Amino acid sequence: MDTRLRHYSRRHGECLLWIGSRIHSGYGMVWVPEESKQRLAHRVAYETWVGPIPDGMDIDHTCKVRNCIEPTHLRPLSPKENRGANAGEAHWSWKHGKYAS
Image (cartoon, rainbow, N blue to C red; front, side, top):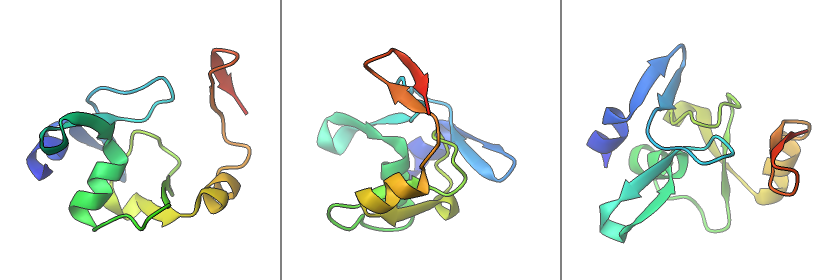
């Protein structure tokens, strides 16, 4: 997985940006052959380069760049902590079909 992550990413300043496929919200998606499915690239990067994600935890981007997979920019937070850390940040609204804050 390390090779796949590095192949589909490029350094941009301090961030390591995922340049492969992305979903509407801006998060990268990577095919994981061992699981026969696509997964969020930042979660796969964390698991590959840092270690297992604790059960029930989100992975927060400290840089606030959704397609960043730089392991030093990723940290596990509870869903409640993650919502608080990202309060006021624009997010994709499926109901309205656009970014909303």
